[in-house]
Length: 455
Image (tube, rainbow, N blue to C red; front, side, top):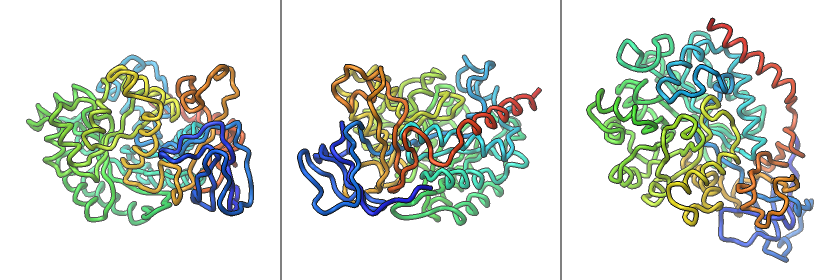
């Protein structure tokens, strides 16, 4: 991993979005792992710096933060049998394939997902892993190793499924676990890997998969464990109308009522998707401070609906962005996800209400709030030195005028430089210390083998 230097001035960027109202047209000073100073237009750092980087070709933004993913799904992108399926049949078609995952499969899938995210300007990623078939009991341990090798930050959630087909759930029995195993492993992972405080690189959350794959007992016990050990809670909720129907038929409750009944309606929780809420439910989520990860591309791909992101945010619910799994996106590109969120939300609220800056805010400060963090998501003195730098030298940007808006409107898809905690992880569009062609070859072979094992 490349070494950080004492201080660097990213001087006179072509454009900058800091997530604050401060003038940083003159650049950003970094010192160690932190932002030291924002330099106004025409200004200079208030103290000497060790190095000056000419950023006049670059648009600088805070490192993007992905709040919902399923890394393992990079192995089943664009699988023909579910290319045109909606959520429930899509899941039913894929559960059996995913049950064949091996530790090596997961290592490769996680590396591909994180590398793709990193190249798109993402510095922190949350993953929701809920599949622990025989031989893959230490799935989250595998992911921790990959995160550390790539030098990114991650919120790795110990997911779970305990409600199989035999008990009226959606997943096949071979993909579910007993409650005691789930809770014991959750506590083990928190003790082994969860880092606290500013600058944390690896954090562990607890994430029963969904109302249609987890028992109410596991939901309640997980909430109690998360409160006792002070970690965050995550689950899918209100993604489709089928899920709403399942909750009504199984629990006699709408989704938010169900959430409250199992002790999850709190500011410890962030929800994936959160599409089908009524006005009263949005108000309740906002009052509780429960966050929502908006997954625009996945919601379009599976025809699930359009989240009411603006109303959720105005009610007090933090809104972040997530690429979701790479079998329902089918990519892990965070800057493209910001663009999709911008356009999808404009369909609901109009162009004036959803600006490029608002969409970038969801992917930075909003996502940070969803993950319970206040040290990332903006470029300001004392914040972590996590940032992405994009050039506008490609044909697609020719003739553009507003550099920040151009990132989204003209379709940026790859960062030129990415920094995490003051260390360059992407230089000249390449990830430090990663042989990408070799990774693609091994990952592609693993994807073919995984499908071959199902025949």
